[in-house]
Image (cartoon, helix red, strand yellow):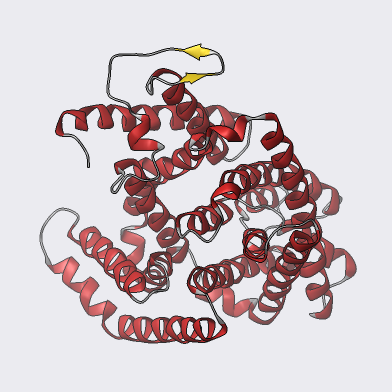
Length: 419
């Protein structure tokens, strides 16, 4: 339990987490890279500082002790019944998926529907199967191989979109296909994650699949029927940000019912975002939602991901580092090949040219937010064995950074002389 006298130390810890996140995020952004990379690095730095100075442990030949509460207890202790830092990070995950749902354009999906759907399916199946079977070949257990496959299904096209915008080809057929496929890709990835977390047998898989289908149908159906009336109520309540409060209530209610249904709260958050995003009034709260999410909770999530690397001190031993580098190489290689092959072949079957198919495959390479959500969700659900979780987390972070840096280079090469 949290000690009353430690509460303000925890607040100071959160304050430093935000300061580190924003400072390193700013530096990385100045280098024209996604700020999230800086936020993860901030977490790694913060975790190292906590272990070195605020835990009283002897580490890397240092034996430094400062007479304040052991802050590592609240950040790195996985046995703690309630960790405030983890709680804030979990809300950050919900905000990420809620914002993703808000930004899901049903109209855009309809325009590129068939091609995007086929490309998304190809972009999920190929990386998942490649990751799973290569995991088995190199000696991983089935459950570890499933986790690797799941991580490789994710796509984050933020860096792709920015690069295509700079090259003035975002609104081309290829650009629209990438955007549509990325949305469907995320939906499939989230559903697969929910299935994997709850599966222990074939019967479980069938039952969880039924629950997911029921949840989507019931809560989307009910929501679409009454959402307009609920949001109108927010306009009638003459109080500051009443409309925002109602939207956030819907987010947390949907996340609660999804979690209670056994299919993961992130599904509920995503459905709530889609639901509110279909209403024209959602434009009034998008900026407020992003201000709350990106201003506080989401950076805490990425910082928390970085600090998790310090939860197991053995990760920094030579043999662990070698294992991480090998695993990272596997993830990066399979991740790139899987997306290019899966999305590229699917695009070719959909009628795109060879060059357009390659462009789509390259555009779907980046991994970022969803890959990190998947790896942390599989760790928290005990899906990944204890001795493997720190390594897979470290390898996933390397995967996200590498693919984020590589993709703009590949896009510029494949779109050369096009506008």
